[in-house]
Image 1 (tube, rainbow, N blue to C red):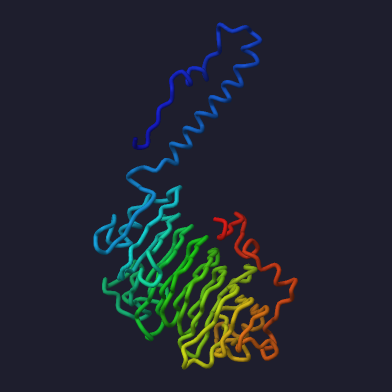
Image 2 (cartoon, rainbow, N blue to C red):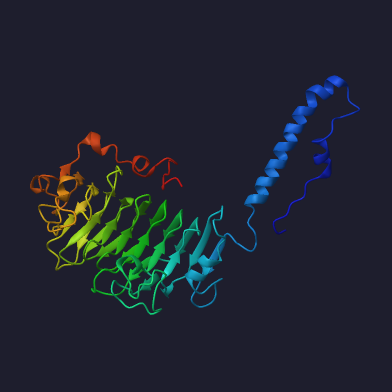
Length: 367
């Protein structure tokens, strides 16, 4: 029954009139309680009605390129979901190569994209900064793509969850070319691959909290960058060239920036000189904890981004730290003097609750 429920008239009547045949003391002691119970029942019916899944907006959808699902493109499935919906909608995506520039706008929230398999459920696009826009102009009047519009997938909605997906920018080594651009809050990615070259993963905005678990991220230069507060757990980070892994732009107001825990840093065989990070902006914050660092990580570990005329001397405000890393690239004694090794007491504060909790006490493991 679409968006409807029935309330027994008897219950409604009991809320508006007393038991005229009862004794006065019965009326005084029993009627208020009965009214309260009745109102609670009505409230329950209202809640059930409000959160009932309208058949027009099902709780699960399937995307398949061969036409065997509800939709053949992921964008069509996202567009079909109720705006600002109260319930999470799962979009199951069958194996295939989906050549899309996927946008999940801010009014599409609580969506889970779940691939059939990480290696074979692929979303790919090939835009890059400076490439001519085939549509002529974007909404801002620009005729070419920029770093910020070069994405394969853009997430602006809150409470978006990705699982078992590969998101690729296949433009090649042509400059900035983002695979995943995330602006929404409480974003989760599990068992996903993010593949590109320069600027693969853009964790864009200050008020965004993001969590990546068991993911694979590869790139050349600054391939994990942005303002967001982000935790990476048990991820594999692969450098494809001699360059920089992270480029955080954490604001001065944020306590945490990028936190890597139990991650593995590997490299292409030809890569021998990679930095853990360099600060895109002053106050950048990046921490590697209990990570395996390959021999491609340089002894100094970090780079201050010298020559930035707009933001000179960024090493004076950044917070770059490590804790109990291991592997050939772990070398605490040779790190730059302004980089830090956390104490045990300091490291204890790096919990998901402290880093990502916020005022709503969000925990991506429990949610």
